[in-house]
Length: 430
Image (tube, rainbow, N blue to C red; front, side):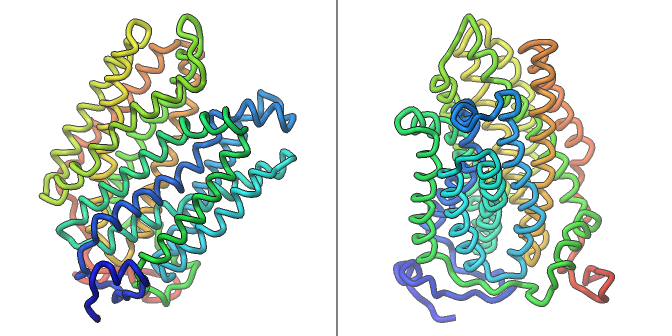
């Protein structure tokens, strides 16, 4: 491979890497930050709608009781993309795959911005969710390009961008909608996505897939094979399901007590708590660094204890908003630390199957997020904010207990997943 300076690599994106090659030039900080920004911008598309539902319902004549279908359709599209699109990162040239997803996302965002019927809006939102999984392709690509020594730090930084995108999306969409209407949110995102695609096109190296010969049907089936073969994926997936159930329990229900008397905060004021939660993303890099040093289990245990404790100040919402602020910071810091550690550990297992690993892992995330959202609204309807806090603390305690019983190092399967017959897979190595 011809050696080039960092400036040359960023200028033409022509640096090619060998399939399955682990020795790669260290990623520059500017490129890692660009990955993080791209991830944050992409995942934000899934969450922009939450503060805009009322405006959408009024303008498009959608009954208020059913406007929640907008969020459901978007999340369904995202879940489908995890299983159908993200695994392609292991068999399709990744630079081309990322560019394709981003450009198609522009079209979907424009469709939403100009939607004048319920059907058009739902179609656009479903496609937006489907293509937002480019976030996970970018995370897996960053992990592949990073050296073994910097992988945890890189994953932490890029995942920090994801969390910031999720938390800041609500605030940004509320402010933009107040200034120019809800459609402007998606049209602005489309414009920013075009700019991001151009920047990534200049920077991303061409990367030959490790298993280009694998057919699409076998590729999808190999995702489920990884669940069977990799105990680490199963354990870390369950942890992701439980911590994001707790995360969704909090953020889905938070608007209910804050917007009700006696607080009666506006939508913009409620959205500002997303900025408070963004402080938790600062823990991402540190968690990745600890994982690089072999302290992933200790980091996980400490963060899960912190997550459980965070529900105490959160439960004081009725008495003190400052206590709530402390709880939000603790909760997001803990969840981010576990999430980054999970991914850092998983990316060291199967270098040739990182996209499939992240697809499987994030599937657990989606299940947990959906379950937490549904359960939290039911808990609030029956038992108020105390019920929500008990539910969230229960998910957190469940995660801590599960980690305690599974923290023994798993027996990792060595070698790549390879096809031996049209109907079976096996793992090479003893």
